[in-house]
Amino acid sequence: MVHLVTAGLFIGGVLLIVLGFRTVIQPMVGLVLLGLAFPLCPRPGRLDAELPTLRHADAPILFDLLDRIADAAGVRRFDAVQLGPEFSMTVTHYGVRRKRCLVLGLPLWAAHPTQQPIAAVAHALGHLAGHDPRVGAVVGTALESLNTATRTMRARNNAYITSSVPAHAWHAGEVEGGAARFNARTRTGEYLMWIPRAAATTTARLLMWLTRPVTRRAAFDADDVAARTASTEAAIASLQDRHLAGAVGMEIHRLTIETRTLVGSRSATAAPEELWDKAARYAESLREQRGREEATEPVGIGTLVDTAGFPSDSSRMARLAHAPRRSAAITLDEPDRNRIEDALRLPKQALARKVMRDCVPLTH
Image (cartoon, rainbow, N blue to C red; front, side, top):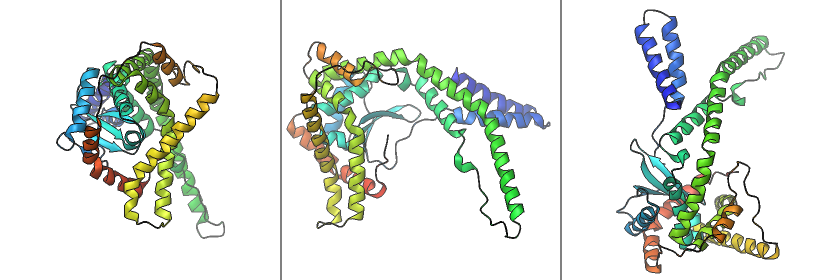
């Protein structure tokens, strides 16, 4: 329905402009319809131009591993891999044909034993294997279009101006009057955009509510895919470490600020080489600290659902723990791991230099 409404707005706007060109009202209405249709138009995804991108020829061992994981999950293989600074494994799509890309988070790859990154990739692909509509070509693009439209039509505090001219200055009254008229026009524009913004927001929430049961089942299916691909223990460990993402991101941010502001005894060129190792050691220390805390606390499954109504990580781990144990169907031996590290050495340095330049955006 979202895509049909978008097409209807676009076609109606074009017809009003073309057929009613001699009038004044019809072209104006057509421009309004086109203005509403433009934010809702589905846009093909793009690869992040600033992230290092790998193709099959750049890292054949890595792509062979990813191909085996995709085959085990029963989904289409990856067309590209990009290295990211986040503690996550994310599957994205780009181009009109929706080619598949894995955004491989280097902190997660470096901090985990071999099987847990395999479980993380398998879990990300499991959502596609479980036919999660929120990542599909129809509902997923509709949600992206609605979110884009809502951000485009959202009121911003910096849209208003304040007059800081002293009262005794020449033409101070004219400046204040101009600021008042500008703010009045801005407020009128916000009022006019309130109805389409509310419609887009309500539709996005309705889509989220309607797809919640299927997305919940897809999360369980993704856990099963991760368990049978990388073993039950790796799938549970991967879920346990999801809470490390925020802390590791803040630590990388702190390390970049520290490197850029403090001058140490070693050269600055050595900093990119050590960034991911330091992040891995920090994640390992957090994991050990969590293990000590869990050893002194009573064991429980925690809450059944999170604030969004989805199964919580603790309930999903309990479900995997009570299910029949599965052994790893895909493993990575040490020589292949070393070959992958050799292929990733230069892209890792390039990403470290980018992080040192731009820092990592903090997420809440």
